[in-house]
Amino acid sequence: MDRLMRLSAVEQARLVRSGEVSVHETLEASIAAIERMNRTLNAVVLPLYDKARQALKTAPRDAPFHGVPLLLKDMLAEYGGTVMTEGSRYLRDYVSPQDSELVARYRRAGFIIVGKTNTPEFASKPTTEPELFGKTGNPWNPGYSAGGSSGGSGSAVAAGMTAVAHANDGGGSIRIPAAWCGLVGLKPTRGRNPLGPDYGDMGAGLICEHVVTRTVQDTAAILDVTAGPDAGAPYFPTPPARPFAAEVGAAPGCLRIAFATTPLTRTPVHDECRQAALNAARLCESLGHHVEEASPQVSAERFNEVFTTIWLGMVAWAIRDWSRRTGREPTREQFEAHTWKMFTLDAERRPSDLFLAIQDMQRMAREIAPFFTQYDVWLTPTSPQPPQPLGWFDFDPKHPKQATERMSDIPRFSAIANLTGQPAISLPLHWTPDGLPVGVQFIGRYGDEATLLRLAAQIEAVAPWSARIPVVS
Image (cartoon, rainbow, N blue to C red; front, side, top):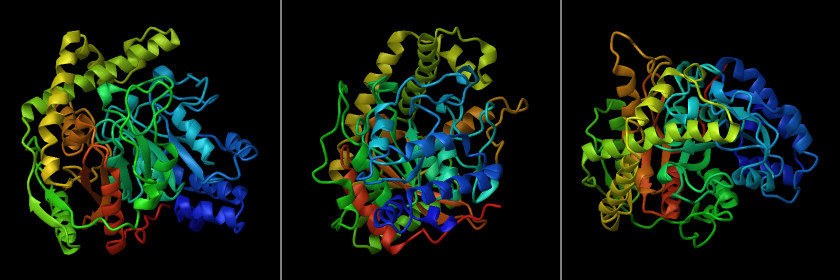
């Protein structure tokens, strides 16, 4: 049963189609894995076993992922008739009235939703330690963070509870958990996956939806069943020339790859993260790509101000949006202190501050775009730090600014792709001496997931990571 959950989603679907395993066996294998490992990891916070068993009766048998278990992050992805809290006490009793478009596409593709995964309150931190559900541990060492904000999904997939879990990304929330849990994490191009019917975009386009997986093939194949605009989408990128899954195994050609080990903000970088990027650069060079050290020129001060303004506005908007949707007045005791602080800080800004930040964000994208006419891919560490112990982000009254600074530092490499809307993928290419994963990020041109997937698959073939499996007792 454990071996079944260690297979990729594509492999599980193939076994179901061939009749070698039944959809019931696949689902029960996932449930058994969750029940056995979740006591240690606290990755799944809302099991949906009975609903999953019922869903098997009506799941489309000819769908590409018929009978494959999937976990939803407890954030944005609404599954009709189930609770969605977004990690907040404020929403602990909210029940989704309908499926979001993304969830509807998962279900049409044949996935069976088996539960929901842990997330920090309103996905606002790079670690998954909410007060509502408690801390999520890293399968490689449960005393360490699984990252955030999709840490529950990252922990669950790395442990082998499912082969795939939904995730979303506003500053690195797919890629950071992928990096810290030893997974593949693709943030697609802005607008590639739908946010409807409730939203057109979020955070001025910062937020993207996708999954964390153990293989490049799964990441590509799942994007094929979810990508594309829904009715009324405010914008969407050019459709791919062919299926994303067809890029896996296709020759990438000789790519021009820039690499950097220092973020645009000059944040200090841990030696293991720097070494991970350097090793990846050498690997790419050995594969015949042209590799040189280079970074786009962007004002670190403006980068920080733009991202902070939009992020504060987005958290405050989330609270006000939910207040409007539920008819409940938000009060301080319903939220974590950090969340409420961001809500109050937003009140000190003018509405025009947000429009200025959006203007600067779009200007930044235009400034960076020429860099990607010179280079096909930009290679960096995914995070400036390897996985950190649980509690590392906690507020310390002796150092009142420390927690905020630590949380702000983690997305320094990843957030730029959210600001520009470009696709970016994290690959598990390095492990620390004590056995913790370190991810390497590859950022591509706007709309060009294809190049990233071809390169990622090429790297996976020569430096495979699937043999590394954490042992969770």
